[in-house]
Image (cartoon, rainbow over all chains, first blue to last red; front, side, top):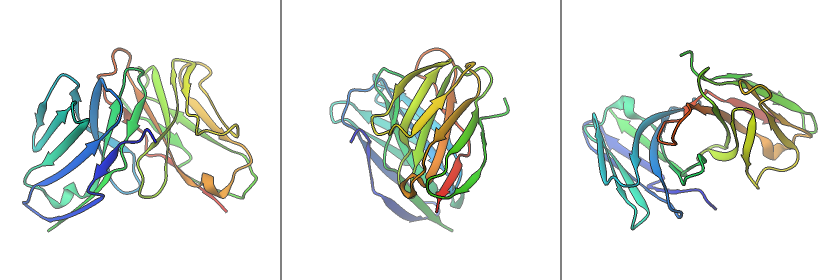
Length: 110
Length: 115
């Protein structure tokens, strides 16, 4: 399958803790993006990292990319109950076609 | 920017019936994508358009599925002779012209239930 793999599948943490989720893929990529999805809704873009970048920050989000290991991680710092959602990575390999990972379901307990 | 709009939000149909979904992308966006998502899974690529041209179609897509974007604006996805396995959320996304270094903008999806 072309689909990316994410782990963990599910993550439950206390408010204020950090959440880390990982994504692995199999092909070469031009860029990798992370999306968030609240239950029953569409996906919302969070952050994009180019293949020649190793780390990127946006507010409480930090993304890393290791193209040699074909993997990426998303760190959410100081999590809030409102961060409860599913998170997906998506990678693009040069044809404008985006392949999504299997997702991590994050639950932040107040 | 009114966002990507999908219609209907929910569709319940009997096995064997045909269904059609509509997607209206953000007006300046020239690329339009269709994805299918089942419960607990990530979105699965179905097809995408650049303007009115359908540039790629997933090999997973059977001949019962067809998508069109006749004038390079809205798009329709039709499923013929629906099966219970077609039950899923169908998501549409669009992106602006230029490089692939841009985010996809998603609609809220059409949830299909085949009974």
